[in-house]
Length: 492
Image 1 (tube, one colour):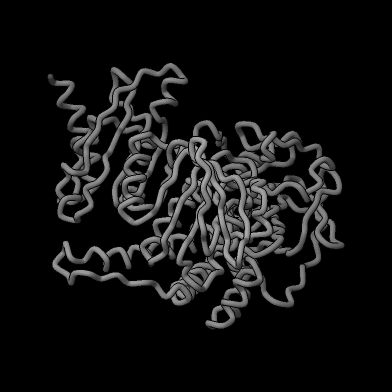
Image 2: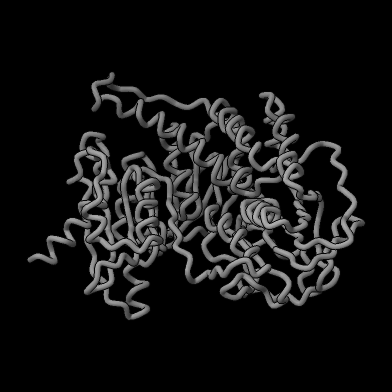
């Protein structure tokens, strides 16, 4: 976590408790064992999951963390962003209260410093679950410092050498910095620093239309910022289905976000004490004044300082560690998990892959990357969630699919909530009721997609799903309605 965040935490009383959990002041690394069954590099979701799985199997474990336990998810990712999104939605409810019988003309502006204090308090509370004390009580030797391979089965941290039978690299990823001229001089924020600011930007420029960029754009717009997103592609969320991205674009506009697609950022600069973004749209050039710039152009794996060549480990062209379908690197005694090797960089994937890699390494089970059924979600309003195959995945693999769609405007709970934008799309293998994937756009899509993930993992067919009672009214009833549409289609 950046030092400025810790200083801010000190002002509201959370710093001491937070540090005591994620990196206690004055911590002395233990004396290494002669040899560990497993050495884990990285104390984020993947590394913590791996260490716990190994200890549950009775293995000796040494865990090395460079910064603070909890990784990006706790310190500068999922937890702080969702806390801030919740604040934004509270303000959105005030702004839109008229349609629910509330007063008209409310235009509140957030006290961002107070919102950030709430976020840090939440983060401190959740830090207890990945604390040093908890790991030590579980029998994990915890080391803080920079780690690097010094041989195929030796990792150095400070002056200590940790010898291992197996190792797991789970060093995560960091914000990708693109080479926009003048950006460094103008000053900018990333996911690692955006939660440090205490004053709401009046004009907020966001470069990049991926999940974080869209989430922060809507949250800050709800809190009172004038937000402009500049995206170089023709739609937001390039990995999502086009109609899902279009609904998000309309929603962002309703939230007051100025969306500029197909836009190239040429440079950033300071002029007369102001920050400016120079951009180009279809050959037309213009300049945009902003108070803050958030760069949200993806993430890149943390591998540069590990001296991987000493262990005979190779990386993909984008910097991710090259692993096989069982999470194993070129060094057969070294595995990788989480953002450092996975294409999709989500906390749930990282946490699951850490335990899977350990079980593979010690032949406690067989877990393959290609067999993972992974739900993910972008937490805008409405939320956009996906699991399994998309239409273009099926086309690329020459798999015939049939899609059953239910619009949320036909779901009673969505209507009563005033949240009827979106849809449920379930893709099945043509000629069967086997669910291959789904996309859900709804205010509660992050919860609804989990039902589809369970359906897929349990290999339930849509015919069975159609007969399962759901609570009424519930937005998740849209999934049952899609299954009923399948059954009715079979009868016709």
